[in-house]
Amino acid sequence: MNRKVLFTMLLAGTLGACAANGPLAGADRDNHGCIPSAGTTWSQVKQACVQPWEAGIRLNQAAQTDGAQFAAYVILSADGTQAEVFTKDGNYVLDRSLTPDGPQWSGKKMLLKRLPAAWELYENGALTYRAEQAQ
Image 1 (cartoon, rainbow, N blue to C red):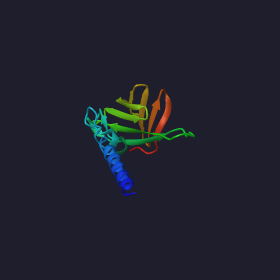
Image 2: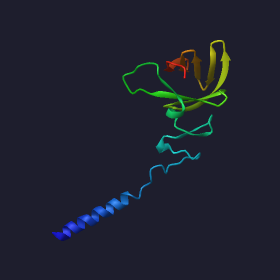
Image 3: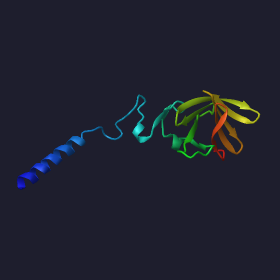
């Protein structure tokens, strides 16, 4: 009986040691040194690793759906001439233009507007994300 217990303990210890040899958390750095498992990604406009939900302006989906709800995040360059938009489909850099209605950033079939009381993001002409208060 003692041999069976000893064998079981040795087997469990061996299997446990094998499992511990996997990659360490946070060891998945990308080409820029960002750690995707920690939620960091490279921002072209900041030239740094960021967590978009902490560094950016949150925009919520404009239309309610029965499925999952997503958010988009906007990070502005230091001089405000560029906006980087992070969506579930990727990140995009938009360039600013000044209009009578206020500043807007455009590119890649996207248009970001800063209105007096809101941010709005349009994709292919349709309002997709919105933040109710200008931030």
